[in-house]
Image 1 (cartoon, helix red, strand yellow):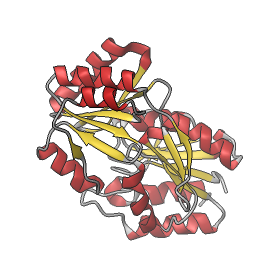
Image 2: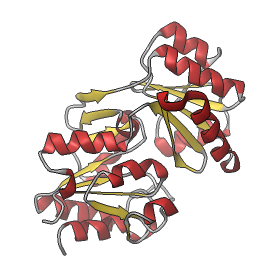
Image 3: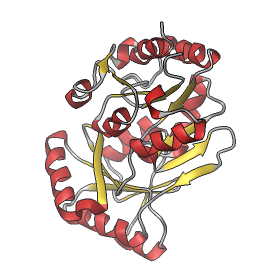
Image 4: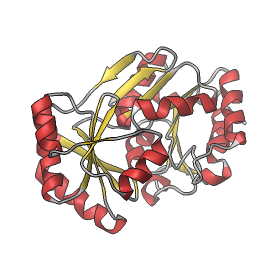
Length: 269
């Protein structure tokens, strides 16, 4: 086998626009695993959102990386193997900035999602991710500071045409203390400095005792770029952002079973 470890993004890579996963992708993942390959999902979703979807892929065991690699867990037991996040003070500062910008904001702490607005953005997010948010009646920043809990991720939802400007302002304001990325036209995500899908590659290659050059990865959005750059087998689905296609082998789109195509290459077919 050319690449015995294969890491895949979920939304926009494995999951089609209608929220389903194709039979061909499911069957090819099973074939890859039967041949001895290790298949793992690396996603920006929270653990509570991704675990139920893994059953569709036949993944009753193994490892999954959530929060862009900030939380890594054993699929079978739910045991948390890695958990990184902002301190309450750090998170409150970022959330306070989003509140100043009058934006729809999310705070993720463990397996709980806290929101500042019950609106169309939240409705769409809950439908796609299969989770319910806790809408607070006080500023999110005040809540985070008072509760003093670790925050895995801070997220903003906004119109696509405003996304790049917000990313630039967040980077200017918080510098190297925060990694800012995007996984969707409507989403901007802030994570602790150093937390990215590349961190998931480092953990999983060490855990599985497979060198990074013998691992492969596939994705579609800019948050997948660190993961793809960190492995030997680099793939981008046909619907991927230009930056991924410039450094990876382009396969079929998410809608046309690109993951299955990449897995065949990983198996040496």
